[in-house]
Length: 211
Image (cartoon, rainbow, N blue to C red):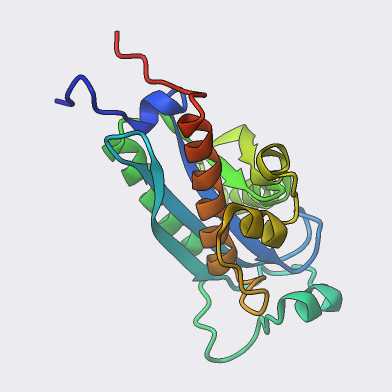
C-alpha cells in the first residue's frame, strides 16, 4: 500500500501511462510506407512526483510485404532496410514484444491504459495505428487518438519546437549525428518530456490529490 505522501504516475495523468515512442519509416504515408525502426521509452515517477527515463526498448523492423520505401527517407535516416546484419524482426513481432512491455508497465503502475508521447506525435501515432490494423492486433495498449506532443509542449515551455533545439533549451545533450535513430530520438524525447513535466511541477503547476 502506498504511503499518504507517495506520488504515483497513475494519479498524475488521470490513470494513463505516458510511453514515449519514436519510429523511423520509409516515408510519410502511414498506410503505405514501411516502418523501419520502432522504440519506446518507459518513464517512471519517484516519490517526490518527478519523472525520469527508466528504460528504452527498440526494434529494427522488416518492411511489410508491398511496403513503399522512399529513397529520400533512407538518405535522411541513413537506414539500409536490407542490411544483412540489421537483425530486423517482422512488424507483428516488434509490436507484440513492445506491447507486452507496455502492458506490464501499465499493470505495475496501476494505470488503466497507455498514452503515446512523441515529438510531432500524430506522425508516430498514425504509423502505430496503421501497423496495428495491418497486423490484426486486437489489444492495442495505447489510446486510439489521444497523445502528448512534445513539439507543442516544448514550444510552450522553451519557445522551441525542433527536437534538437528544444533539448538544448532544456539542457539536454543532443548529438545530431546520432539522431534519426528510433532509440536515440525516443530517449531524448523522453528526457525532454520529463524535463517539461518536472519543470511544471516545480513551478507549482501540479499537486497530487491526497484526499
